[in-house]
Amino acid sequence: MKSFVPLLLNMSWFDITTRIEPNDLTLFLRDAKNFIIGWDFDENLAIDGNVDFELVDSFIDSNKGKFIFTNLGYDLKNSIELKLNSKNHDFLGFPNVSLKCPKNVIQAIQGELYFFGDSSIEDVKSLLLKEKKSDLKQRNSVHIEQIESKEEYISKIDKIKTKIQRGDIYEMNYCTAFLGSFKNLNPLNTFEELFNKTESPFSVYERISNKIILNTSPERFISKEQNEIISQPIKGTAPKGSSVSENDRIISNLKSDLKEITENVMIVDLVRNDLSKIASKNSVETKKLFEVHSFKNINQLISTISCNLKSDIKFADIIKSTFPMGSMTGAPKISAMSISEENEIFSRNLYSGAQGYIAPNFNIDLNVVIRTIFVNEIAKSIFVAVGGAITTSSVPEKEYEECLEKIKAIKSVIC
Image (cartoon, rainbow, N blue to C red; front, top):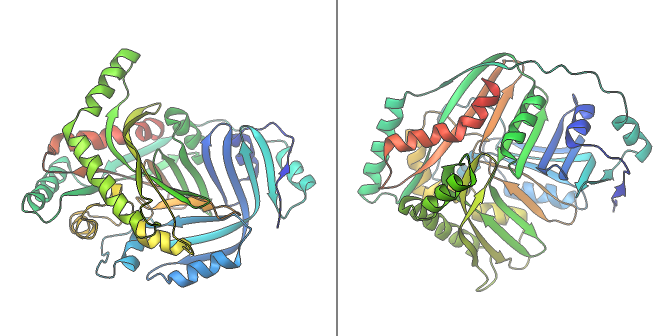
């Protein structure tokens, strides 16, 4: 089995990434001192349409001891719950499941760089120390529009509330999307600026040929360390105050907001139920309930649920039991997903899916794909989606305003 080798270099994630591009690469960014960058992918598995989960587990088993990077598209749900389907227009075209093994990985742990991979340490250092071309930051030139009007959005929320009031569902995540075109856009510089605005701990920058994913997600879907799984759903959003006293007031209001608390409770119950399918007896636990996380630009209400795994649980077992994440579906899960498909006018594709990795020791970390810009360099197009939880107490106008609040940081760096 390969081992990590100290690189003995002092470099930022940005400097490393600029030297590896234009190769395909993936960056998982927690903060300035903790990140993983992988490139030169050899073993790959991409599945569109119906997903064979045995094939997924077989790929993982055959690549034990390696890093495996994975993207899980939202429509993987159709292979988990066979009564579901998707007919909405797909603007993105990513597969339902992709798994790939980077030949080379650099991991930063508290600022110390380590290398794991096939290349020689000398070749990696030579790559990282090569002179970087001067990169004049051009101002982005992007035009972006929502795919439905405010009136159409509000009409959909009213329809969903009617279904909630008659008992079809208790809560549903409804998503809308924005499409854009650009003349000038530097994806990596844009990602850097967006990350600096948000400091979101589950951010991902991924280049797949001419498609680039700029993901500044604040939400963890699941992580696995040894035998413990945790999930950290977000339900409850408020803007960040401009002063400490103002933010304290906003946090106090968020923690006492009945609508936000109700949303969070429903999703916690849903996650507990999902985890119980793979948990050892009596091990499901709500570790933290309604904890406010203040990010650089926003406040979020986050709960933490954990369990210990039964013996012989595989990756596909975990995904089939927990995906899609409850924070992006609603409750009951299957009914909520079906109703969202009826009302949304686009395929979510990778949005509200997951990005993450399986480590060589089979620890797992997956985020929720939100607060994300999808860039197509050939078409010179971008795609951004945003969603929110709808309950009986939802005020359509306020739900619309929350969507605009969630996309504010993104618009500020691209428009």
